[in-house]
Image (cartoon, rainbow, N blue to C red):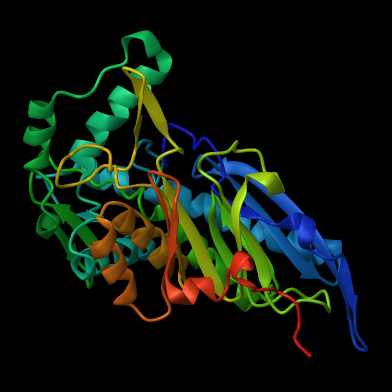
Amino acid sequence: MRKIVSVGIIVIIVISLLAGCQISEEKTYNKYSDSFFDTFDTLVQVVGYTETEEQFNSYVEKMKSRFQQLHKLYDIYNNYEGINNVKTINDNAGIKPVKVDKEIVDLIVFAKDWYSRTGGQTNIAMGSVLRIWHDYRQEGEYDPENAKLPPMEELIAASKYTDIDDVVVDIEKSTVYLAEKNMSLDVGSIAKGYAVEVVAKEIMEEGFTSGIISGGGNVRVLDKPLDGVRERWGIGIQNPNKSIVSDEDNILETIFINNASVVTSGDYQRYYIVDEKPMHHLIDPKTLMPGEYYRAVTVVAEDSGVADFLSTAVFLMPYEESRNLVNSFDDVEAIWVMQDGTVEATDGMKKIMKSQGATGAKTE
């Protein structure tokens, strides 16, 4: 989806805590893991319990194939023969509606719906602005000594073409039309999480019901571990002030969940340096500059697409407003890492945090 690969996995699967297998009266489940790196320009990790390695590998191949399909559909940079994707929509802005697959229509309808629910903090119609930041960030990474900020007048001019109401979707005809010629979509704020949710639901219907799918830190947990020991999976949240290496000393917190998703947005993922200051990729639609309220925000929700969308929105709001938004939804929890390193969490999040006494173990 992006030419710049994420610097690190911001939500860590606590693999070291996973037991090897469970032997029951009926079946034996073994733990397996695999990964691939050819979709959404990020590492996709899969951990799970199945009866055989062959069965696990079969599930992984199906997931990989589906991720590849969704990657091509949601791509904003590349064309693919025989496919109308998000780039095709952008290329036809102000020209004509583009007939697209249902997966694209569903994604855009989802994004427009959640845009209205969250006060417009996450806007897939910000492509004209985000493209400018992308180009300056890329140039800054290739030539750090000459890294620059985009001119504000250029950003303001581009922001005139970010009205999400000008993204016209015809569900019956399965078409998408951008009403202004200078408009473009950027679905990077939700595409990975949304894709993870699609893949998770489909693979569960295939029979893979005990596992974790992590797409670049967008983590979706399927039911519970079949190790005979735990009722919930342990997911580690990266400390933004520590190395990206997956080490327990670098985990800010461990939370215990099942049938849910965990997504983090942070200022330490994709950035470049201008005058010794990191300029990250999460752009505030009000200021057109990188958000500065937090180091990181982690959201837990049942749906991975919702968690991905909300993690960006929550990151770009002042704390009181941000917390009120989270509290307005049932079954959504969050952790905020402030600029000074202090941590805030919703009451529901505290109940599943290791530091607050939570555990994944079975209770007697």
